[in-house]
Amino acid sequence: MENIIKRISTRNFLEEELSQKDQEQVKNIIDIENSAIFGHNFDINLVDQKFMKKNKVKRIGTYGVITGKPSYIFAGIENDNHGLIDYGFILEKMVLDLTEKDLQTCWLGGSFSRRTLFKLYKMSNDLFIPAVVAIGKKSEKKSFVQNLMGTNYHNRKRFEELYYYNEAYKPLNTIAAGEYYEPLEAMRLAPSAMNGQPWRAILEGDKVHFYCDTMNMTKLHYVDMGIGLSHFERLSKQKNIDGRWQLLDIPSTNKLKYIVSYVQ
Image (tube, rainbow, N blue to C red; front, side, top):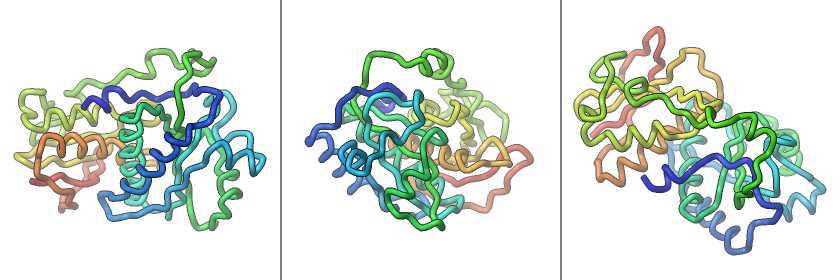
C-alpha cells in the first residue's frame, strides 16, 4: 500500500536526464511487468532525452503540461477494448514499481504528440497509442498548469460511492468489505483521466465484479479501468488473497457496463 499512497502525478520534472542507473531500472521493470488480465503482451518503448536529441525532438508532452526533461514509456497497440484495459493495467504496474525506485511519473492521455512517436518509431497505422507515461525526478517548482489545477484535482470519491454490496447502488462500507477493503481502497486511490474514477465494484461473497460507470465508454475509460484494476490486484496479492480474473456471464445495466470479475 505504501507505493500506492506515495504515488502522485508529477508534471514538473528536473531539467536533467535520467541517470544510467535509473534508466537501467526502468528497462528492468519493462522487462518483468508484461502480464495482464486479458493476455495481451506489448512492446513497451522507452523514449529518453538522448534519443529525442538524436532525432531532434524537443518534447513529447504538450508544452506547459509537462515541464523539465522526463523520459517516456509507451506502446503501440491494436485498438480493441480488452487491449486498452491491459495497456492501463501493465503500465500502471510499471508506475508503481517506478514509485518504489523513487522515480516520479505522470499519465498523459491526450496532451502528447502521437504523430511524433509514430514518426520516431516508424509504427504501422494499424496501431494506436492510448497514452504515455512520463518518468523522471520531481522539480519542486510548480508550473502554471499545476497551479491552475489546484488541490481539487487530487480529490477522490468516498469508498461508499464507488463500491456496492451484493447489488448495484447498495453502498459497501469499509467493514463489510472485509479482506477486500485494502484492495478496493488501493483502487480508489488510483489515477484516472480528469480524476473521473470510472470504476465501480459489487462485492458478492468472495467475488468482486467490476464495472465502468458509463455505457458510453471512451478509449481512456478503458485505460482507466486497467489502471484501477492494477491497483486492486497488487493489494490482493500483498494480502495473500488467492484470486484470478474471470469473465462471467453478468449483464451490464443501463448505467453500469460489466468489465471483469475477481474470483477466489
